[in-house]
Image 1 (tube, rainbow, N blue to C red):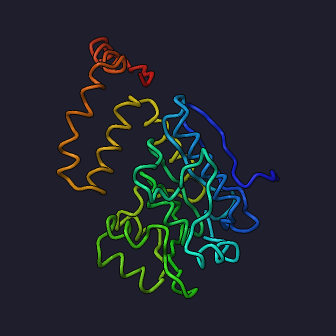
Image 2: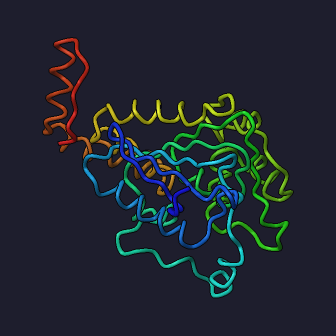
Image 3: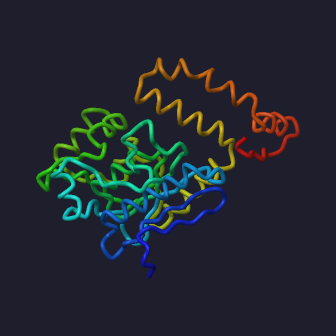
Length: 262
């Protein structure tokens, strides 16, 4: 077994990031969190990377925080210090989020931080056996990684409070019904489906994909009008790009476009 707590591999313009602490149910210690931060930073900076895929080795996505390591930080009112080139995987700073889409594949248990990581990604695939739980209040604390804000954005106030205030588990089927995940697969097929989606995204215009993601996030964080005001200004530089020319040319020639991201 590798000593790395995060396995990172690039394929077909997709950066695959695999949690690799299965003997601890992929519980997040500070080292794993920092390694994931570095991977997000690489995804953000590397022009050859167009989409991320977050997944986990073993039977479970994550049991959540390795709380004894995190408790002293929370007591001081802080999150872990991140590497200079790292990006917070929770994306709580809207001005410093990864600018490329991330697809997430989950299986087994996905508790606390796992759900908050999921809420910071863009497309989610779950194995039919996945069990979700935002269970911090069972431990005497409450979620501080974004769930109290983003869960209601995803599934509505009443549905969010139903699970935040009871710490009840959410089945994969219910998560799909609520819109928390977009696809359900048979156990063991979640990575395959998520990679298929990530590769589809990676084949499309990186400029168009990133502009779409930026516009949607602007609408969510700053309101619809702010996003509307940026629609044409953000489109104008894309209209001058080689990718726009390739998109038109490929349409005329009835072939798949070969986008370069410039």
